Image (cartoon, rainbow, N blue to C red; front, side, top):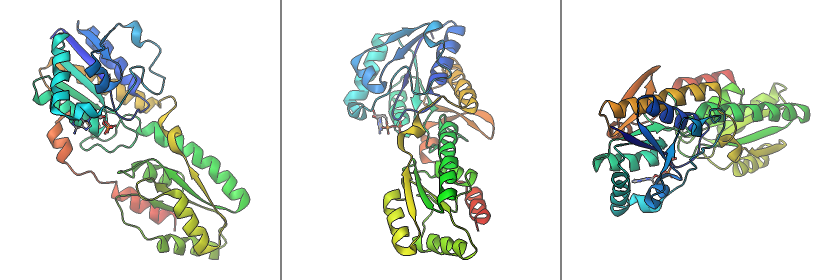
Amino acid sequence: MRKIAVLTSGGDAPGMNAAVRAVVRTGIYHGLEVFGIPRGYQGLLNGTLTPMSLGSVADIIQRGGTILYTARCEEFKSEQGQQRGLEVLRENGIEGLVVIGGDGSFRGAERLAKLGMPTIGVPATIDNDIACCDLTIGFDTAVQTAIEAIDKIRDTATSHDRTFVVEVMGRHAGDIALHVGLAGGAESILIPEVPFNLETVIHKLERGVARGKKHSIIVVAEGAGRGMEIGKYLQEHTGLDVRVTVLGHIQRGGPPTARDRVLASQLGAFAVELLLAGEGGKMAGRQDGRLCAVDFETVFHTPRKPDGYLFDLADKLSI
Ligand code: ADP
């Protein structure tokens, strides 16, 4: 193997840059030529490959976003698109590809692997919604950003005797809400994977009021419901002064935490080592603290559940 390429795709996540750096530097360390493909699969179809040097990834380990940019590309979901992508890689002499992204990006990576291009996926998404790995790159930073916001919200909630509904990201997975809710001492946590009843939330709020509690925080994952609607409902049915904050895209930005930088460095390097070992069609992940290579098929077919223990614990601690 002489030439490999790397791209970032789908939703951006803090730590993607650290992963790109690890791919480029590990590749060069092993004597490979490494190419960056800007703007994900769209860039691949456009045929824009950029040679990456050691210096091209200098000073990026601490930066959020992705220097390779990211994009969504409908065309790549078609067989013709995938075939064209394969041709571009072959025309440029690329013998292995690293795709840094989430579940959707892995589906594209799996197609390329099936067509014969050794492709390794590196899990990077703030939602932590990928099976067979403990953590995805970006999750730790997103939780840290959200907890800092919630601590600030708690200050004002306490000062004004208010109830706050805070909506965090997570369309299909409630991991951010769960971790932030537990770490932020939220009274209730609503996530898409666990059915909930707003009457239970109201009951808990009323129990709190009865014992003299004057402020509360309810964390809602966006996939469980809209914060605005939930806030309105709670205000109407309790008479409490309820305010809503939607944290939105700040959860995606900012410098990655040390934990995310370490994970990204490990997984980026491991992805290249897998390609060098002749592997393809796999995710480079970390499970139970150890590096592991898992077939995309297994990743796609393994159900992901939120941590039930943490969910119950958060509930117990917020009685
Ligand atoms: P993420 O990787 O963050 O989950 P998306 O779901 O938007 O983000 O996927 C990113 C890109 O991956 C899509 O724009 C598309 O180019 C590619 N992709 C997604 N699903 C498929 C699929 N089933 N087959 C091939 N490519 C796909």
